[in-house]
Image (cartoon, rainbow, N blue to C red):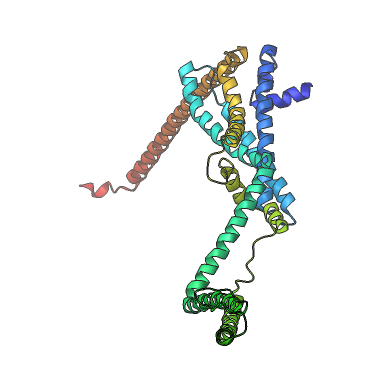
Length: 375
């Protein structure tokens, strides 16, 4: 237990030899250190999970996830440790708040980054369903776009084919009406166009001949329509329209399972809205509160450090800092004085040396001087 406490003290950034002298302060820094440690642990899990989806499908995806998760967790742990340990409890309340403000903002950003991959895992099932809808709608839109482009490309052929189909429908309707009239004539049903006399008379023969002629026209028209449709089908096959089909359930499941981080992150944002575009308040609130929970958890060590009263450990650290600063200033003065004395000694030595050189040179000049020719 003592080793665990010392580990959490290290996590909190406390000076362990000083903290050991004040048992009343130890629990506070154990709690702060534990919070920082678990924040780093969550960051490692979050970063590793995110990296796993970045390299999903690769044989080394798990190894990349473990390495990145460890590095990311260590970075967040070190940053949190610095943020908490750098708050000076000897300063005034306003100054402490001023010191903590950028650290809180940084903690909020870290909390948002950490929470996102964990939210992706929590809403994994809902994300997959939303991705399936998105992929299916995307494929449907792609097929519609291809069909529209194809119809525009072969606008003349489609216009001719539609005209032929309209003529076919009109002929079929006319033949059906004529057959009914022929039956009325044969069976003696009186209408404005039939005689009402039962039997196979001249009118019936003439109507039957007309029907036969129009049927032949219809057969010829159908043959032309079949040729036009065959041509259109060949062009569709050539342009690749037949290869584009709506995804099956199995294909959608496979696509959702291999979706990357960007797609899953987009789908998580879309969970706040229903398929029809209306806002889904229940899911939106759930996603928001999970994010806020991690943000609060990330800011908690800073808040604990700010809310805690200044204890004996803080006084001891402040006093130690003052002593260290005083020693540093005295060391500086000492080195200044030594440097000044050394400088003065060097100046005196150099001055004496140069004086002797000048004197020696003067003596040599006097010895060489020609005193006899002076006059």
